[in-house]
Image: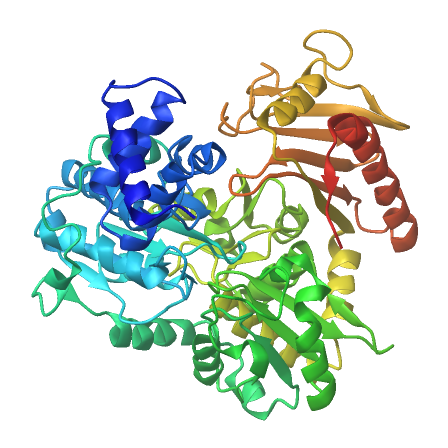
Length: 626
């Protein structure tokens, strides 16, 4: 370990190299590190960078200063730690300054309306970073410029931010969270004044403004300026009351809920969801669910799970299963750490637990919300203004229900940023958006939140299960009934891990030049390909002009293959993780009820896609671990 004097000397040398007084090393890295030493006032991250320079740790310097975090439509997401490539006090200040300047240019009434900021419970003691600290620094930046800030005084679910933007008519919202990412990560998510996540061109405009505002403003580090400041408001108690009042409007069977004998277990997986799901159950006149005690309190270490992501399946639910066995609960509801997603599990007659996929829960919730709406709206004319949405990689089950029942279904690009913005457009046109979902266990059951919301989804799932129990039906039985009525939609999705961007690019370019230049595959093993849509290049073989209807993006990879047997498979890169994901579905019309045969056919199709399209050995891809 170098002495403090040596560290200081090395830091001075780095500054000198950056100024052009010396050679050696990557001067771009040295320059970025030198700038950091000049700007950073967090003693922990400052010391970490000085130590890297003293130790001449080029690998760590490259990791921390190789390239700035890219601000995209998902905002920022990265590990907490020093440097421009990670989440820390300085990068939060710089990001917020850029966002602030962009908002000033866009909204003439920013100083009247203001912004909302909230945070989850993440923290990283080595670098002194935490979601709460980042939220306070973000608030400081805005208040230093005379802009009102509605800063939550305590942790909230992510959906509370878009709700507050819409409810208080604010210009923007910021949520500091990394959702279900590993514990060392954090993120910075931005909502626009329409209450939905930002989409292009705002991401590019904000990114440019961040580049132009890297020198911290005079009061940037002095977060004491927000204390007792007339521009600072705490919306916690108001929003906590108003959100649940609005949620009550989606309770259709309070008498059933009051007398329900069905028992529930809830886990917030060491995140923020516990108190809010308890409140949601009270709003619906339920007895609150039993909470998994070891996972009830927020804990940034996530000590009981390998990954704090209920989408990963049964491993995350081990403690929930144990509690449910003890309390004789039949239904488990699991939120991810920022409570915008929901996993549902049900105990079957044979004693096994069935964890519903996002597509299966989407089918159940879509059916339930339509059935409940129909009971209250007998006028057939109202159907013409009724809409449901799902992302293009999600099950097409809503399309099948819409076709039979006579309402509208629309598909969007992957992610709730697209569904939220489209829902807002439709609502502004006087349409009724009843439901939207994505297969990654995200559901928008109440359009007063234009994003996925695991709190409302949890209590609406509970009401659905309780109502079915009065008819002696389980969720699994009702799901089967939906498939019998509207046609089986069997899905399978997974991913391969790949950290090398060049490998990913080569894999997708190989698919675009599979049988010679600019020719996509015509077969996949024994399965005939009947159509190809490439949303990276904008090609769609099924359109007369061969141009895709959905928006395209050259910055991400996404190809959808349609097969002659009724199968559809999409391969795409993840925006937030080093994964190449795939989503496969076999859709058949009503009447074909040989579930096992359909499942086998889908399994065979997925195996062929993995073997011929992914080629994991050739590209050295790491499969998903169970």
